Image: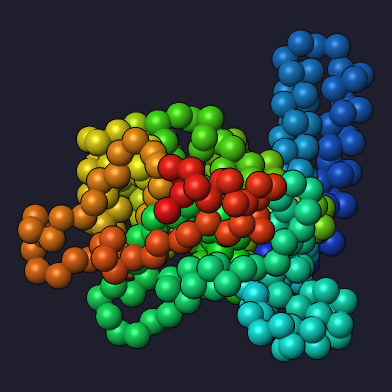
Length: 324
């Protein structure tokens, strides 16, 4: 019953109806009456009924508050570009809008060692490679072998969050994050995405640990050894395989198969990220693929090299095996 009410509330919010102004006074009064009724009624069943009714109204009230609060907070992100790559062009709207010139400034810049960093040149390479559409069959598919510590995971999480909030095009869609064979990794990535909206916007989410509902789009993280629910999605639009080299060999094949089968169903973005120096990388094999490759191969993909300015000891770090 609560689920059906939530769906109706979502439809009203989508239509632009001020649901908080219309329903919250009614629900508050109903909850207050039920609480008083439960306190004065001594009969066991009556009290239980009143208590359940009170918690029912409290649940609906909390859901309406969360939805309306998140909708109003996310409205400042509508229509913003992900980043303005030209520095001179970036300064003018930044001064005119008090820092709400792009998505990353609106939610606060990414941090490393307690220092905020702008987008770097290699991140523009990632952005252009993923977002540029030139009519090729490899559009929207990205394979990337990177040095460790470049912040590519944070970049991809922000790209996904931006796609959800820049307009309402991604409502009723799904985004998928596949991590290594550990549920804790999936929880950490979802928490990192939630934290993007907490620092500056003060927006908190009450979804379960591995799920984030953002502007009507469901973002869910899956461990690579539990892909059952990943196989039955209705409309996935973005699939991100994080540190795919850490999947077991059989899991890598399975994840790739499940991901690429959605190409004919919902045509999602597919991003596969690998790190240099890890134990095992499965490479796409042209000989085993019918016709042209659907997803970029290492020859077509990106190789991101270490950036010394991101490390406390950049010169020493760039000589280790974990860098390209």
